Length: 52
Image: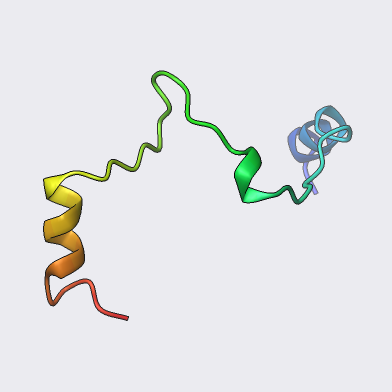
């Protein structure tokens, strides 16, 4: 392990992953991962390319 990797780990020691209820999530201005329920989304959902 390189010194840079060790330093990165030390800087992130206080970070952790937690689970929360989906209802607690809120959108905010300029969010980088916006999902818009618009015509384009409708077309995406109805195409044959978007099948599970």
